Length: 254
Image (tube, rainbow, N blue to C red; front, side, top):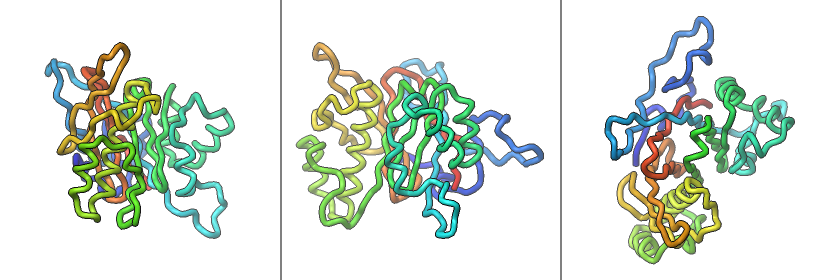
């Protein structure tokens, strides 16, 4: 899977990548930039992909004697799928007050943002271009007696591939297939109106093209990429081809 070395440790320091200097604290030395996400192959190599800022926010347990105002790990799934438009003004204010300063500043300045959450992790995609992409994150529950992600979302080929894997690897693989499908459906605006088992997303490696059924029998090609920043999660980003958009992991914060 594609990895970003700084994200692998969910680095507590703010790390810049394609983010404006206006978020830099006065008098604070600028940290070294993260390596950019590898750009996808494009039909027009002279076209540089537009970066879409992503904030990865690990959410730990609320301190037992804390004020109770911080986000809790269990509150992240409730935010999944919400955007600036779907949260009321009061809910937006409460959320921004509970996020790290750099993340809330970026969200306050953006005309659009989207939230993707699973237990213990919140991902924020900022900017209008995020509307044209799809994102999906899920926790991986290895060692469970039954897979957290149901096999019903898989194609026959994907189910066979998963069944061939050792039990310790099976849940991760099924979850990886699912986030690919979920992200691809979001990228084309289909949501779960299309049955995920109709989409083949069992490609090897960390990137591939997924064909999403469209209107009048046409198929929409979508580039899907997996990124890993913790063994506890599977994360996928999808972009309809040939749009030149790429995720830019602006900061990783605790």
